[in-house]
Amino acid sequence: MSEKTVKPVRRFGEAAYAVGIVLCALGVAISAKSGLGVSHVVAPAFILSSYLEPVAPVFTFGFAEYVVQGVLLLLLALFVKRITISYPLAFVTALIYGFTLDMWRLLLGADPAEELYLQIIYMIAGAFVTSFSIALMLRSYLPQQAYDFAVKEISTVKKYNMNKVKWIYDMSSLTVAVALMLALFGRFDLSLIGPGTLIIAAVNAPMIGLFGRFCDKYIDFSPLFPKFANKVFKVPLD
Image 1 (spheres, rainbow, N blue to C red):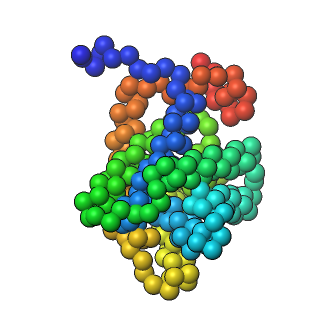
Image 2 (cartoon, rainbow, N blue to C red; image 1 turned 30 degrees about the vertical axis):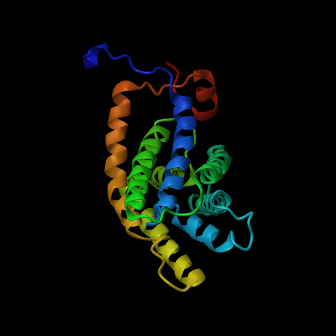
């Protein structure tokens, strides 16, 4: 079948948000199960939950994400000196994602794989699924998680280069994660920040770009509810 005969999926704007959240949570759960470290972006929440959940079961990985993303949104509002409707909605996204993450962890099991070949498979699969999910969510007009939202908001309000903001944020997140790990555990734990963390950091952006180009080729990300998108998020009407 030629590429010209392939019809794109239509009006996928809202669905990209929903599918992206589910797949992002799955990808993070898979990465955590590798035992080789998680993405530097979610590492602070993962370290907090790894330390606190054994003594306070309510402090799951998903719950830690609510906390970290909530704090990030508060700091972001103070830094850019504004709050829009996207801020609480970004936190709602974090709540949905965190709940879904805990469900995937429950289904897959939270204990990391022991065999090296399984660890490698989980690490690779987690990187692929996470990158694809982010490519979807970035193409939806609905608010992303606080991590991506913060980068976009700072770049927009402060007129900074988005690539530089993203790099600074990534390095800051990794620094915070390392500091938390050393402060809470007193050692460098490769299951928290390990080779998987470095590999994901290296391949994440190129893979998101690759999946994004594929999605743009076959999927129409315009909103299914254009009047709502225009009224609430100022998305232009067709």
